[in-house]
Each structure stands twice: as C-alpha cells, then as structure tokens.
Image (spheres, rainbow, N blue to C red):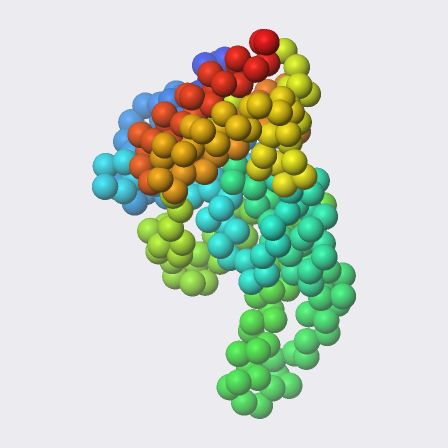
Length: 273
C-alpha cells in the first residue's frame, strides 16, 4: 500500500466521502497528494470521510464523475426493509434478518450476520467430504459468505472493512464499476446542508418524509413539487449535526437544483419567522 502524509490544512478541505457524494465530483485537494494525478476514464476511485465510517466509489464516465453511493451498495440486498433513515434505525432493522444489508445514501452502513447464520456457516463440512460438483459449489458459496461475515464490521459502519468486502464482491462477480452502476437506475438528485440556529424547530413524521411542524411548511413543499413532474423531496433535521438536510430528486439535474434552492428559501423563511 502506498501512502503519503501531508501536514497541510488544505489537504482536509473540499474532500471526503460527503464532499464527493454531494458535489458529484472528485475532491479538490487530490493534487496535494499527487501533482500528476489526472482523472482518467473508468479509473476506480474511493473516498472515505474523516473518521472512516463512510465510503463512496466514483469514476469518470462520458466526461463526468459518476458516484456509486450507499444506494448502489444497497442494491445487493436480497431482503429490503424500508426503515427510518439514520444509522441507529437502519442498524436495528437490519438485525431483524438472518443477513441484513443496510447503507445510507452517504455510504454509511454495513452487513450484519446473525450469530445463528455465522454458526451454520462455520459448520459447513470440508470440501474433501463432497463428491459431486453441486455440493462443491454449495461449499464454495458458504465459504465466501464466511469470508464476508469476517470482513464486515458487526458493530457499525467501517469504511475500510466495507472497501475490502466490496472489492471482494466486485472481483468475484468480475464487475467493473460501470457494470455495478447498471444494476439499478436512480433519478438525478440534489441535496443541501443548511446551517441553522436550532434544527429542532423542524419536526417530521416517523418516516421523516413529511414535515409536521411548522405545519404550513409541508404545504409549501407540496406546492413547489407540483410544478415538477415525478419529483420528490423532503426536509429533515440532521440526527448528528445542527443542520437541516434538504433532498430532492427529479427527471433532470436542473429541476433537482431548482427544487433544493426553493426549499432552502422556504426553510429559512419558516425558521426565521
């Protein structure tokens, strides 16, 4: 592994998983690490956040940066449970399944194996005990699950562990990032973080998809969305920072950005008043 240590405050600016995810582009400080770096087509890139519990992949395709975020990681799910956003809710939901896979869109997440599953996998007989091809395939599949169970962090999100596991999966499937990206199609989206004096002034429904206080704010959101076909958006207070998160998705990037800006203005209006 090659690494470079740079004692320079600039190296921590405009970078990290969240920066890449929100801005849909490589971090600006990358040239501090490699002055000769050039973002090449289909070059596999990965970004962690500061405490290494988030991970996003990104690569250059058709002259633009394509980001593979937590939503793309969640596509690997066999079982999907719609849970309230936020790690403490998703983690609890994932534990209900034998193998629970959860990732927030920002790349925070993990894969959980119930102890009973890990025990069953450990009891799989050795390969030499199998005398036919079908059973050898079953054995090999079980061994791959054993490996994944040992890599994924069972207590919380671990970007390095997730990187190793995802690389193992991509290698096993012989997938390029482009192949991975084709597993699902997502609408263009946009999100903003709005610094506020008191995020608690905004209350949402249990699913965090509707604002219930201030009561008129959700009506204004619905009015904005009515002018964009097939658009969706929500405003919610962050669970970890004193900010309000604004998210929108629509048929094109321009519409997403317009919706976010309008919801930003509405949020400021209601929080100030």
